[in-house]
Image (cartoon, rainbow, N blue to C red; front, side, top):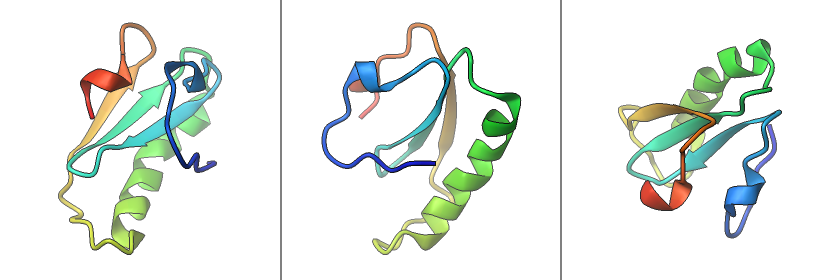
Length: 78
């Protein structure tokens, strides 16, 4: 996984990738249509580890929501 700092653009969501979008009060996992099954399967564990180790003191109860490539538009969620 790679962290992208700064602003996220819709074009950053690539079909061959799984992206985690942190909105602080919730975390979205976006599954690109061509992403590997292994990457999709590991994404929830990665998101949970991210919440556990975030120095801002995040709750492990923060909702983790899954979105598949399609009509997802990140601007509606954060």
